[in-house]
Amino acid sequence: MSADTEIAVEVVMAWPRRFEAVMLALSPGSTIADAVVAASLPGTESATGYAIHGVARQASTLLNDGDRVELLRPLQMDPKEARRRRAAGKTGG
Image 1 (cartoon, rainbow, N blue to C red):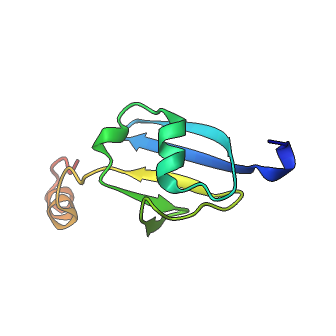
Image 2 (cartoon, rainbow, N blue to C red; image 1 turned 180 degrees about the horizontal axis):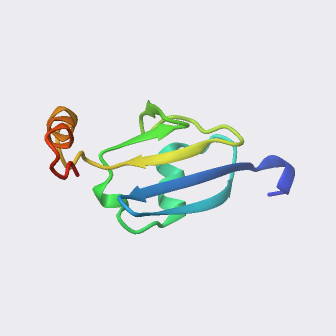
């Protein structure tokens, strides 16, 4: 496969205090699922969803050149409860 027939994609997994990102060159027609497998990032099994540039997508979504695939994790706390705790002066997650 020549370089001009590949698409550049970034796959990102984030945790509370760190993140890992992998740049990939994939063939056109690749999906989010293909990119996740190719990235081989630790913790991908805990992903509860996917996004491209912050917009929720399905694993079967086709990728475009320059896409950033974000692996979404489950919420550790309900956002409303986190705000209540911060407002009360407690740690909110």
